[in-house]
Amino acid sequence: MVLAAVISPDIMVCTLKDFFPESNNSGKSLNESSKLAILTRVSDNEIVPKRLVELAIISYMSDNIIHAVTEFNQNNNDYRIVINDYTLNSLEKGIEMFNLDITTGKIPDMVLFGESAPYESYASKKLFTDLYNFLDNDPDITRDDIFKAVRGLCETNDKLYRIPTSFTYDSNAGRENIKRRSETTYGY
Image (tube, rainbow, N blue to C red):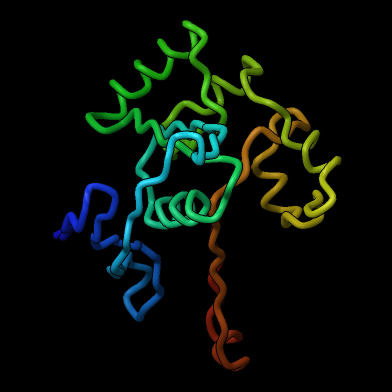
């Protein structure tokens, strides 16, 4: 529930919800907290315009993405990420709408694809920018900052069109005598 009270024509008090991911024993979950905010009207000439960056979503939007976009928008003075969730109704209709937008020249700045979205068909048509061009010219992050194995899985014809928002790895540990008794292999 959001509470708001108008104090005067230029001042309003309200609660703001902040969503943040938290790890717990059962995995990751999205927690929320509320804080009290005082909003004061400013004149139009005091508003600094921000450049809008469109993030198209063609998958489930994870809690981590919501948190990252919210945090970015709260802390960046020059840019604001605007989310266009194509899959609110269904993945199929979302892909259809995304394709229509692409063909009419409405191209987002970034795209978040899920596992079921046809990423490879877009990559094969070279609709994306090679992210290596940015990594090779960035003073803060380089190719080596991304695990080579993860980077390799994301490459298409030696081009980097995508970077995962997260990844996990599994490992097993045990006493050596248990390992000798039973051998298990996993294939992918």
